[in-house]
Image (cartoon, rainbow, N blue to C red; front, side, top):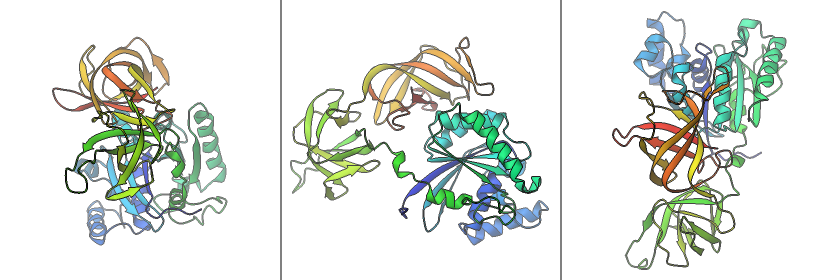
Length: 418
């Protein structure tokens, strides 16, 4: 299989405290030679000050001072690295329950999630919580890394026990692709290089698995959704009559000559030309940023959506959302917020909290109607104007929303349309 050298894979890491997430990422960066020498020197010095022989790999990701002092991850730490086969963005997210919102933030754009399990402890409550959130966010690929295999004598039997534990639980969730890898992040077994201590494991080590994950099919190529961000009118020689609608193609493919509908007005037209930068192209596909010209002069502005005439999203002012509350202040009933969806900004309110999800017990609480920080709940939202929406499961871009507090301009909630 050919992998595009420029293809970008975003992945997030999740696990309980002390499962070794930061050490694993440090090992990935260190063994793939993706760290500058001055960073290595700085970490070596800090390791010596802490009385550690060699390099404390976790320090490569624990960027905040509090994290280094406490030896834990608090905020989402993003790291970038490249191999000859692929580019990567890592979101290292905290493991504590009080940082659920940080995990949701880090995982929202991920192609894959690495869930770490301590080989000594097996599948615990925190593992289930992270798998549930990964399922909720529809992350296409899950890589379960059973870490600290050196502390269970590299036992194949113990590894298989944990695989069975996870499969029994995850069969109830909507997860499409799960892989299992036995590793020791501290010693480097099966992270970048194949482990000699676990010759019973015949599949690829972690880095090779990430390099060869097939992510091209993760983007919805069927439902063409083009949210207009701005209208381009150059008014210069050669472009006097040019009127282009610019934005990013959220999903699908658009071609010159396609019959399209403009929402919410419902007017129809045909695609006259497509620009990708300065170049005219015959077709474009998600997630390209393009400018589209239509054969008819229609009043189109930011927030409108161009779709296929015979394949349209739902247009609605009221819909259900699985929402994670991100703000320290609790929700207030009937308060107006700004809802942001694709390139649209409208006013909205939470009409009802249908239920809150207890992600420790996986039970629904239908009585508590107040959303507090880190709560995940199903809510009914009512907007002042119609939005063009898809179910999040079918289209992550047109199925996601955020709510912004008008007075503080803070993002207070993120949600997935169901």
